[in-house]
Image 1: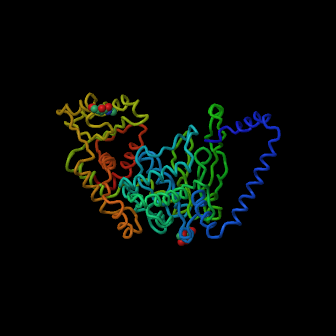
Image 2: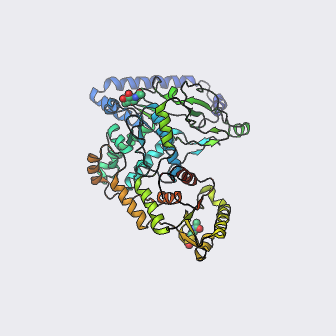
Image 3: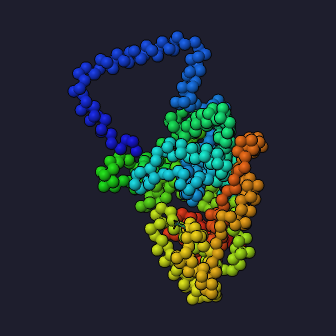
Length: 501
Ligand SMILES: *[C@@H]1O[C@H](CO)[C@@H](O)[C@H](O)[C@H]1NC(C)=O
Ligand SMILES: *[C@@H]1O[C@H](CO)[C@@H](O)[C@H](O)[C@H]1NC(C)=O
């Protein structure tokens, strides 16, 4: 984003030129003085002091991989998720694919708060640079730890069918950090003011290393700087698409208006980042966002599909099509259907408040009204309707929802709240189950007890609601364009046949 206009610096220089008649002489003198100064310091300082100095300066400017990290036989890959849960889930799926293709252990991130990390818009060629997305994810991770709300995406999504030595290997981000950076993330909870500054300095160093703030470092980290403005990742047996232009490019109007110089090329992920590439020796491969979506006949960033010879890859592809929630969530959703709704029902998912959806409230209600009217005419009555929406219950007055509730003869409306016993009980069970794919749970739990006590229960409402909707036998009405609606459709397609609701 910072190099959209390469011309101004030159113009500024040429304007200034007449002011300095002999600009080279003072610059030359300055360079010589500085060189002497540096040489003097280098030779005059006693060794130990110089080492200390260089150590602190390299640490704050260009961190190095610890010997410990370099000694690990295992190679890792991480990425920076963004936006809401459904986006994070689709990025996680792409990350699983990348890890499988590149044979690297996937570092599994936590679930980020809805608006904590933004990416921007690929079609508009206006996105945050990969290293900046990575560092905001890191900062948010620290916040999640400090507020005792850290929960891994693998604690919500059931990855047990994916994870095996031959398919894909995973490690929790917390475990990865403690092995790779040699510091426990739980130290972020330290209250002691004396310890705090050194802890936060160490965490900051780890974060800038992981984010590749200072670029790639040989053998240590390879930081991917390509994003959807320049690159579409592909994967073919012979890499035949590598280097080809993508069919979607910025149009002339946008190029001129925004002075965009990006050209989108298709790159084979195995050829570019896999064995035999310059990346192979790097202990950690860091992607930015792995968000992708179909757009104008192309994919925005990841265009990897099944038509591949490799059996292991095909089986991975098949498994990530639909990743269910962990059993505790599925059980809670089904229990609500069986014990509370107790009848065939319609599910309505109404996204009314957030972003683009605010302006489409009327259209959203219109589709729902039509479906409900037809169900009422068909009978039997009352028609059972489960509603999940971001509009708080107190604000239903005056909307179609309150009409439905008051018409008790024709409709029976059901909904769940965050504080419902069913949802809270599921959260307690889920925490006890420990699905997080932790490797070092023993040593780690003593540390977290010491520093990050009283972990908060995760809010499972959204996931339990989706499970309920996946069981709605009278149909599902979702908000057009909502990724939550897409996920429910997926659950209905892949889940309903195998799991009796
Ligand atoms: C994948 O990586 C693991 C661990 O680094 C290694 O043991 C295995 O041989 C690799 N598999 C392939 C197909 O390269
Ligand atoms: C919901 O209702 C509360 C108080 O009744 C009001 O302050 C708030 O602005 C409303 N929110 C929306 C999104 O309508």
